[in-house]
Each structure stands twice: as structure tokens, then as C-alpha cells.
Length: 420
Image (cartoon, rainbow, N blue to C red; front, side, top):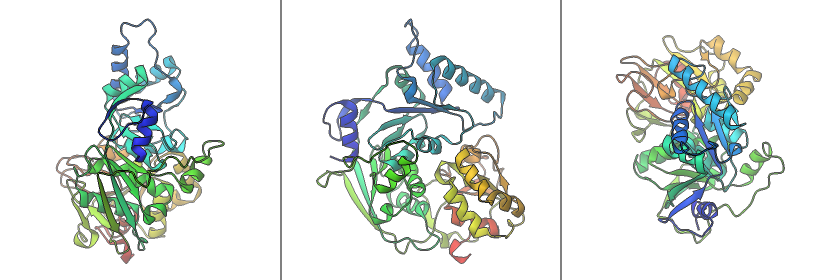
């Protein structure tokens, strides 16, 4: 069996294969301040005729505020009030207002383990597959059903195995790898399939970079993005879950059946850039160098970890941000923010003319702050560049690694980081 088939077999209590429909038990359910209110409304609608309107298991539900924090409108404030009330009423203890972006906080706080089936009412929930879990995004009404029953139906997905090998060149990172894969496969190439990432390149990645790769499986249409658990996973989780021991069962068998195997050698991979207005419109940086940028955004659940921000800090040194460019840096969680603070990077960025904000999604979803105006060009380390994604529908968003973002912030135009 593949990892996905093993996880769904455990979750449904019977041996299943790709293509079968199952009713599966959920290990963790996550919602946030944008999608949570609709899930809560749906839950109460489901429970309308029941005397006791209680969720199936409050210890398995996680509620996080990250998209509009602090509240940036009266509607946002009302949503926050609603979710606070719901968490208190239901006894949901895993409830954090200002901990940071949900997809960073979930693994960081030990809510995800290899072999788990995790759902979140956000499409980038697939990020947790970096820990060997099957994690996927669902709609708010599906989340309402999970709140009520702890179960959800699935079609067990087929798996595409991505074998990525080779040592990455200097200033080329996992973001470049996943952009390259998305550009090759296309936005629909893995529709409703599990993207399983393997090979020496993936095995050599630290957890921070694995999260980047799994996070963007949805951008090729994937249902999940999974990396089999290993010693890197074990070390990461032992720091978060007392007594955690790796179970070697949670990996695809040697004779597992994959719908497709794709092989890549990234030894000579060039830094990659996704161009407007689709994530699969990927080009080598050499083909887009020189495009002037108005704003550079480093952060999001894709590349807002300490390791990402450290790349930017080291590349910039004591150089200032290019004149006329806004550099916005947002660590993905309170924990990551404190690492950046203690390393002295916040002072460095502020002196360089950048802006450092508290942990949240920021401009990634086109809300709160840092939005692009008509005709402006933004370069972001986030995961989507759809029209209007970061502000005006007349703006243009390019996606890159933190290294390319740093180089471009220094020069004021898209720049190959290998030249810095």
C-alpha cells in the first residue's frame, strides 16, 4: 500500500485501496477566523434538533486566528467574538488568538503525527504532509459535519510519486524545487491525487523546507502532499511530543502501486519564479530578471519560518532596501518571531528600511494590510499569485524563494540570488 492507503485503512477500520469511498475517522480538525464562523453556523444547524449541542471531541479541534489579526474590520471583530464564544462553550482548549499562521502552528504545537488523518478548512492544510500525515483542506460545511461527528467521507486518492534527486546548487531551495514541479505538472496535473515526495533531495531537506514542498501540493491540484516520516521527522516531533517514537510503518511499501512516477534531477536547477497570474506559469529567474518590483513580501505559511527569514538577513547584510521598494517581513508564528528577534534580525531589517509585522497571513490572502495597488508589482514568498490575490486585480504578483526575494529587495527588480 501507499502511505495514503495505509492512513485511510487505519481511519476507516478496514483495508482500502485507491478509488474506494470511505467514511473515515478524523484525528485532528483545524479551522481559522475566516472559515470558522461558517463551520460553526453549520454545526449548530446540524445539531438543531439535538438536546446537547456538543462537538464530537473538543480535544481534537484546533481554532486559530491568523487571516485578519488583529481584527481589521467590524466584521472581522464579530467573527472573532463568535469563535471565542464557541471555543469557551465547547471546551476547546486548543484555541489560540495570536499564535500565528495555522499551518505553522499546527505542526509546531505537536498537533500532527505520522499516520494521522487531518482536515482543515483551508486549502493549504496539505502542509502537514511534511510530517507523514494525510492532511487536506475541506469546505466549511464539511468542517461542520466533522465538528458534529468526527467523521468525513473521502475517495481514497491515487498517488503520484515524485522522485527528486541531486544536491541543490547554492541559493536554490525547496521553494525552487516545488515551483519547478508545479510548472512541469501544471495546475491540474495532480487533481485529487496524493503528491508523494521522495528521493535524496527531499530526504536531505530540513523540516522547514519539507513544509514548503508539502504546502504547495494544492497548487498542482493535489489532495495532499506527503513526505514519509524519517529521523528528521522524529527529531522534530520529539521536541514537541514527549516520548514520541517513529513508527516505520508509515511509508509506502516497495510494491505499492502509484498512478505515476516522475523523476527529477535538480543538481543544476536554476532559481524559479512563478509569473502572473498562475502558479504553474513558472520560469527560470534568468528569463524574468530586471522586472521592477514595488513590494517584496517574505512570510506566509509557505516561507515564513526562521530559516527562511535568516536567508534574507544573511543575504542583505547591512545593505539597505532599494529605494522605492517596500520590504514586508512577517514571521509565520510567535515562536518563529521570537527566534528572529533573538537573532537580531528584526533590528537589522528595520535599519535597512523594511517593515516587520507580528505573525499573521498579512497580504497573502488580500486582506488586512500590505496590499498592492493598481499597476503595482509584488514579489512574494507565499503560495499563490492569482489576479487580485494580494490586492488590486490590476496588480501583478510573482512568487519566489526567500533568496530571490532578498536579492530583489536589494536591487529593486527581480534578481538572480546567485549574483548577490
